[in-house]
Image 1 (tube, rainbow, N blue to C red):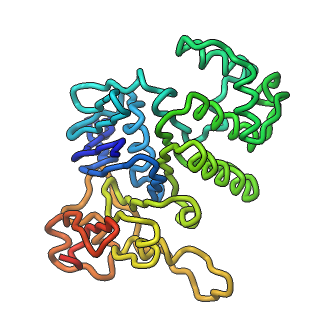
Image 2 (cartoon, rainbow, N blue to C red):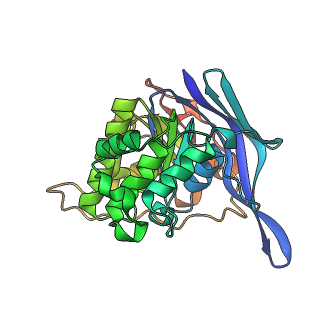
Length: 321
């Protein structure tokens, strides 16, 4: 069953530069299907549009961010929602059917409300009764004691605050959770605990996850599907096993080669060049100025996503035309 259908989505920020209003093409014509029970990882360098895509999928559009073209359709049984240039019907589904763990979620909790009051606010917004026993059982599942409920956010460690945010995001049993860099501000040990927790929730509660990260090394033991994003475009997608064993796009290969391996003493080389401007992106393939395999075609024509091999493997590269 397909939960999310993205068709030709373009989402731009409007900014003023040199006295003129210009568009930052943060998400520039992407299409994707997300199925029920998927654990999808979206990976790429900082500034490639991952967080913007997460905001659009959750319908959290701010005044500077607008849908220029395409749409996102979400289906939860009889409940159907759409995000498009015409409007956004998703907010009524927040928390109950779709939840969001934001980037920098450690500061997402109200500092002047105790944790039980924050849970009370959540339930009140959905006209649900405050059931302390259910909340305590849910916190226990996430390795949090009931004492946490009587504490303020500043009294909790970073890992505990992150668990509370995850507890809030999962309490109403949504069908899908969008997690935007949920471990970026944590130490390695706490990071591993949070990843194990997300995996547990995915398997035990059958929650679909969209996991945004710039750290490709986190993905193999967590996700089953993967999308590689560069400068607002998808450049490769497929199963995690397929992309790790048979990466095709040069950008994907560069990302995978950056993962440190035990016993590997070879020099790690950075991707040549720098990420291109999203205000004035180059024509053709946006990666061609950094690609060692580029041809004249790459600078003149944008490659489409084409299917290769099996396991839903797709790549946008003229090397495979």
